[in-house]
Length: 215
Image (cartoon, rainbow, N blue to C red; front, side):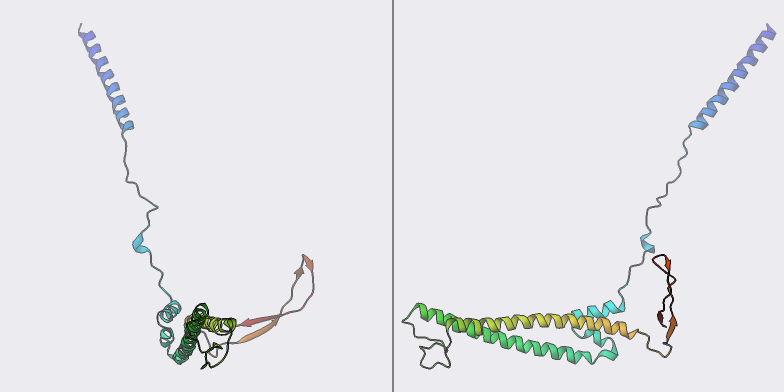
């Protein structure tokens, strides 16, 4: 009985060690290791640099806000400013003059239509042939086409020219800012050298040419 008991205890110990090792291995295999996940797509906003407006764009923007302001920013183009405002003043004067004439002759034309509709109304316009104090004679079509439409067309055209003059002021400020950085030193040079084209249409071809380099 003693040996049997020893053998039984030994068998139980071996089985216990085997099953404990197997269980520990299963636990180890089933362990989930959680690693921190990094987002490689996330952008570092602090490292991004905003694109700054160039000085050429700034000059154009300044002249768009106030004509001539971009030219004043570059001291060598300040003399453009009187020309710009002289153009605006001249165009503004002719716009106002043509608009005044347009309004005047529109009133004359409406007055003509009113007296034609009511023959008892003798409040004639200055160009009505029935007006004893007329300063000229114009037909209805002549009053409309030669004066009303003429002054309106001139006024509208001058407004378009003024808009173009405004845009030219912006372009002038931008170009002036560009030319300020243009290299005009004595280091500029030109070099001419012969130019030969070896192949034309995959065929050898002898020709002559001239290559121009500006340094």
